[in-house]
Amino acid sequence: MGIITSAIKQKLEESFNPSQLEVIDESHKHAHHRGAAEHAADGGSAESHIHVIIVSTVFEGMGTLAKHRAVMEAVSEEVAQIHAFSVEAKAK
Image (tube, rainbow, N blue to C red; front, side, top):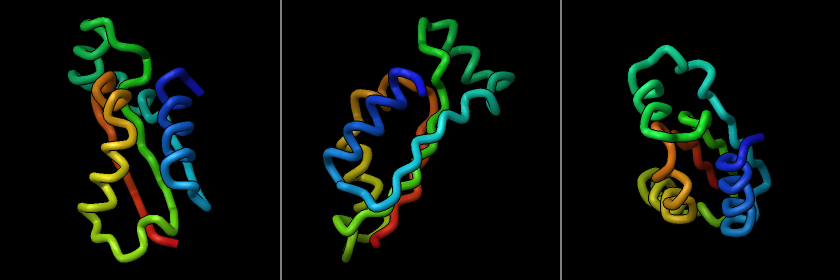
């Protein structure tokens, strides 16, 4: 796990105490895409595409957009350093 994915995992664990958390570096799947190449050329890390699956009781009663906003707020610094970030957030 790289520096960015480790930081994302730590912040999400602290913010949501999830029952399930997967922080997946999918950068290898996108290495040939223009965005990944531009990210690397701009001095970005090898971590360019991150996918998160998170399940937490914190999300109970929240709509999809609210869940995604909460996750994005918790990891905004890390997301600013990568090219693409996707989330699957579910209530337990």
